[in-house]
Image 1 (cartoon, rainbow, N blue to C red):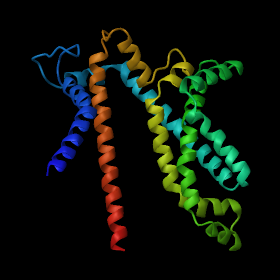
Image 2 (image 1 turned 45 degrees about the vertical axis):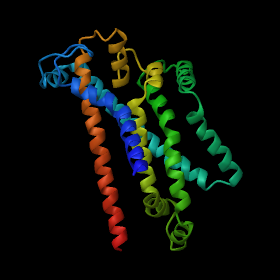
Image 3 (image 1 turned 60 degrees about the horizontal axis):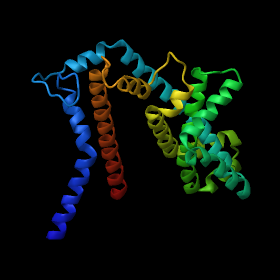
Length: 267
């Protein structure tokens, strides 16, 4: 009994440590105080109205999601091609390519950011949307490869050989046999790439043009002024919306996975 109470209390304590600051932020998004740490007697949805009316923030949100989607699509295509190529390479070449692919993951992000900025400057890209997109693809590409490779290993290789024996061309066999088999890995890599792109600050800062902002750079610049920027209160509402969206996404994914597991058990 004591052991159960202790373990339950430990879990609750960890959850409080993790989510209490976020819950406080959610509460402040409904409070009219202009500064965190000072409560106002007025409550409501005014900050959400400010958020919608703030054209700079709305443009920043649009920039962030467009960049995340475009870079994630490119990373998913390139990562899938790279993973398939590595999987069907000779063992020695596969190990070498696998190690090279994991370097951006292990490497410090600041090193990657400075390297990309220098290379883009050398090739006359400068700090442009092209350099920003290249930076996000370099950041997310290895994670797509890591998501696709396990699905390739789980796949029955005889299916591809059977498709060729039945007269399918290598290209048709790729799209009708291999891609459907590894599609869950591609989707996982795509979602992971979007998450990494939305959250990135360092690479974005070193590669973006001066007139372009993502949510991470905009929020940092706003709070870098000591939290005195006029857009800071509206950013509390934006953070709350992002948090609620992620909670809904996790819940929906959990429900879908449980339904799939239940269907498999019935079969």
